[in-house]
Amino acid sequence: MSNSEELKNQVAIITGAASGIGKATAERFSKEGAYLVLNDINAAVLEEVVSQLSNPDQCVLVPGDISLETTVQQIHDAAIKRYGRIDILVNNAGIHWIQDITETSTEEFDQVFSTNVKSMFLTCKAVIPTMVQQKSGVIINLSSISAFVGQEMMGKSTYLYNMTKASILQLTRSLATRYGKEGIRVNCVAPGATKTNQINETHTDDLENFWSAVGGAHPIGRYGESEEVANCILFLASKESSFVTGSSFVVDGGYLAQ
Image 1 (cartoon, rainbow, N blue to C red):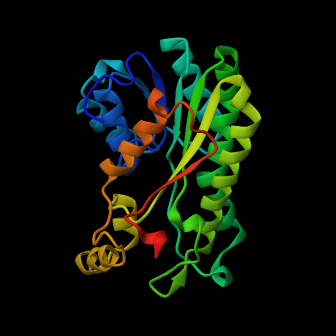
Image 2: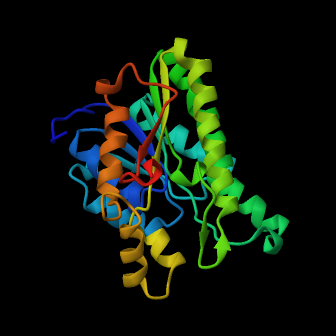
């Protein structure tokens, strides 16, 4: 899709919008004419992102912890107060996690599930009544290829991260079948290895060799870029995907096809 104002006058909430896939999605949606309500726990970086958007005046910022119901309510209320409707929800916020099960505390388990899964439960719970009233809406959840496979990195497991991403697949399917007749479409995107700050911060040692190895593990011969995932999110948010719901779109350079 080129810049075609595909989302003109559409109101979109994007979580985790300060970096990576969330930032790329905000940039793409802005170019396509959307009104944005952006969330991230990093308020300062979020403000920098907005200043670089195509239409920064068509944007509301609601920084805060997306795993808290108070933050989610603030996001919903800001969208309604400013724009009067909610057309699109992009549940992007999440954290990566590498740790064996024998080393994981119950507090860490709860933290990862709260950020990656509870946040999506809260945002969907908040926006669905508005979408039902409108008889229209699109929800796009960010899962991962980690939902489909077992993985280890740096000699440890990503089991907990994988569990959260698998939960997102089922949340997507369940909401799609429940609310399809209400005019709401729910899909998810499962990226492969995508070069983001989140991954860079996890792998602080020898990043050049790390990304080289990651790229070589994909049939396409490289890792993904955030903008490539944002392109898929845009498709699912647009009318071009009007008959698509309950689906998982894998954007992984062929990794799972091996």
